[in-house]
Amino acid sequence: MATVLVTGFEPFGGEAVNPSWEAAALVSSTVAGTRLERVLVPTTYEGSIETVTAAIDRYQPTAVLMVGQAGGRTELSIERIAINLDDAQAPDNAGVVREGTAIVADGPCAYMASLPLREMTARLHEAGVPAAISNTAGLFVCNHLFYGVLHYLAVQQLNITAGFVHVPFLPQQVTSRPGTPSMSLAEIVAGLSVIVDVLARQA
Image 1 (tube, rainbow, N blue to C red):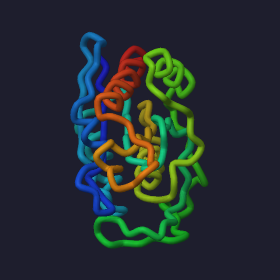
Image 2 (image 1 turned 30 degrees about the vertical axis):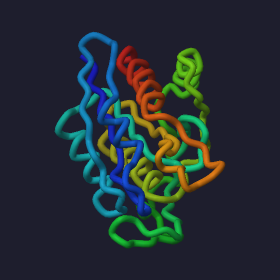
Image 3 (image 1 turned 180 degrees about the vertical axis):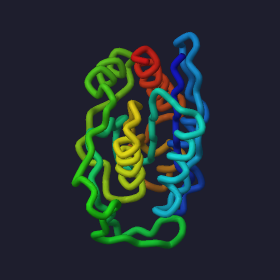
């Protein structure tokens, strides 16, 4: 039986909601026998990785789908690569700013997601959901978590498929941001559900 762990972040940057968690809480699967577990992740450098790795140890999933908000993007961004660097001027929810800091001292420069990126993108397009493979997950807490989880799986030698998807703002987040793209919660949930089904069928 496939067990897919889906994670989303708490709101940050003054936002009242975070679409990554709103969608993670609603994602579903049409693949019989699939078990979904969901974890809310703090938008902090300290604690984000540990929250997800603890959930991995607890649920022993076959796949981990991490989801984060990327305001300004127009589609679901399936991330290809996580790099070993925190470098953002914005503070996390604990007020911490990290600039030019390695996530793991002496760790590899980068890890590649083990998601079937092209298959997922094709399936999303078939479902009518805008999506693209992305080569940059940023250098804030999303990339921090992405890298940290892939590093944990590598060190622990766990055969678990894992990767990260960025989602756009929700419409209510852009009412005071003319011209900023958004995507409905229903469409985000539909897209993530397609991805979950791809992962479940590969288990």
